[in-house]
Image 1 (cartoon, rainbow, N blue to C red):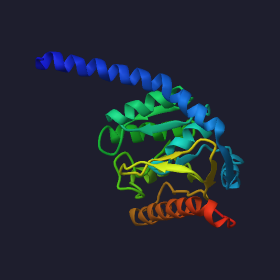
Image 2: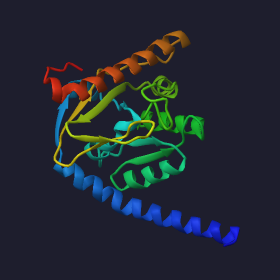
Image 3: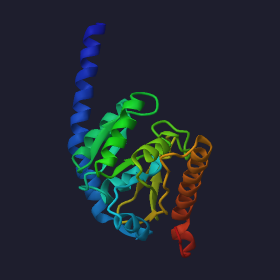
Length: 233
């Protein structure tokens, strides 16, 4: 087979896979989500921001996004998604679940995407991003998250989840998939506000604070079904 024919075959295969993903992905997510028993902890942290009629910046780890595609569907949330091949699959799936994708990352199309996220946030839309994505390192917050919060003057709401029964893939982010009919917990932490005139040194402290909060929240979520202790996010 010639290189030209091989290239055409790959393009056709890619289009078929994207079509199947955009068609079947949302159905599978919705079907799985309907079986989950979800408990929310920390909603008062979000409600405090809502009382001021402010939009929020949801920040969660890349490996925990699956549950949120179900729990936060049909809310018109604008999500930062990479321009890589995997990002295209994610964008097509979440579009059918009522999300709006903003394409870009810290390595490709980053500055434009960050600017768009700031614009969407100040326009009153909730936005969401994975501060350790799209390629890691896992559980480490990239600076772009803080820039969006600083420029848009909107609070960052750390959010995470876990499931009593789950699978973890052998990917860099240990992508988590809840098993059908599993108990699930969603934790929301206290908002982090970034002042518009925040100096670089203080901005770094807030970045580390977000990183620590998300790490601690995720640890609490993973331990919840084992320890059965009271959680104060």
